[in-house]
Length: 172
Ligand SMILES: [Zn+2]
Ligand SMILES: [Zn+2]
Image (cartoon, rainbow, N blue to C red; front, side, top):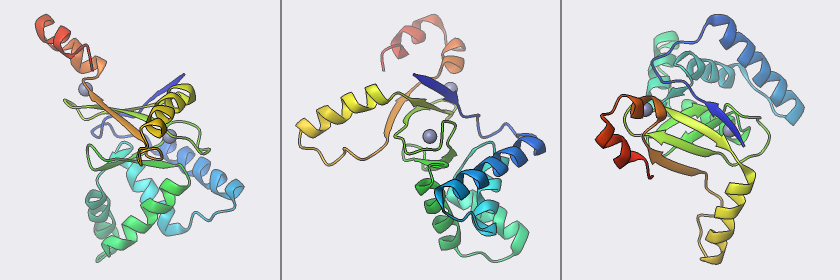
């Protein structure tokens, strides 16, 4: 199982890290035969600059600050493209978009969402995902294709809780 932590929205990445992630995204799209246009690339960059996690309207604000009026559909279309390329995931529980921290090939992440600090940790465990999928299929569920979000309290936040509360949050 691979665990990759997505930083909290407050932590700002360095310029060189953003540049190398943009380069990697560009290379990934090239291999996929898709085009990371200047606009798509810019929205991905803004998301990276916000620490890898943001709401669509935050990105729209950033675009507006740079270019003046920007239609919301511009941001959503770019995000849809980035999601289709597995560069970005949508976190429904927080209504945010996060940069994928795993390999960008087709995958279904397990997204662990901390209800206290709102950090998101991406887990990639194909066996676990398949096991859940199988159960859902057996239940004749239409949820089979969705990403799985698990809500709880992250390790960092748990460490700050008093011992009594810690045991209460241990079982998610
Ligand atoms: Zn991912
Ligand atoms: Zn937390």
